[in-house]
Image 1 (cartoon, one colour):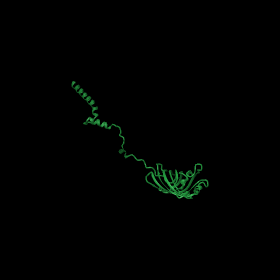
Image 2 (cartoon, rainbow, N blue to C red):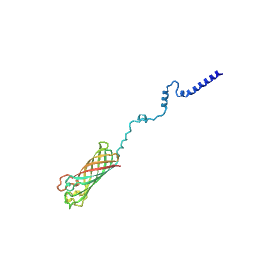
Image 3 (cartoon, rainbow, N blue to C red):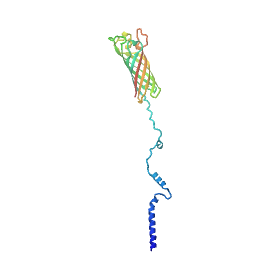
Image 4 (tube, rainbow, N blue to C red):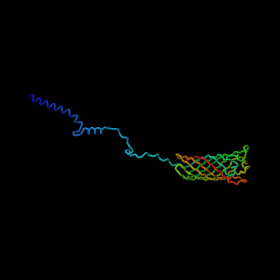
Length: 243
């Protein structure tokens, strides 16, 4: 009886020991070091996600800005503001005058345009007469021409313009005849040319320019003893708009 009781106690104690050791054994696979188990646990846990790089997203260098649209071509309106100087005998009659000129044309090609023009300037006879006798008068003209343009760089172009038309001084009858320029009181033929440079900003419709022109205004020749050709020089700044 005592022997059987001892066997039962021994069996119960052994079972308790087995139950206490089971949880620690379940934490690791048999034969595997504890460090391996902890490493695998840390690998499985989510961590902070790295930001995608250009290589991982398939993107290369940053994209460049697109080029500006090509300059618009078509109907052109240009306005010039500057001065008109008289180089012939008429310079002894009138000083340099304020001058305004307007062109309306069409660009047939990128390098060639045709246009019609009108102009207006304001002069007086202060070079030939005293202050009490000075006559102030406008000079107006109109005509047509053609312009050839060479684009030397993306925003810069040079041009040559040839034009022909008529012009006259609008004065009381006989005011210039007494000074030897009766023909200036009626329309007379004028022809010449202009050299200039244009700058095209980002706006594809606009252009700004500087221009110098020379013309032969036959009606402003001195009719009595004049010997110098009736030349006129104009210089101006311009703004153009292409519709």
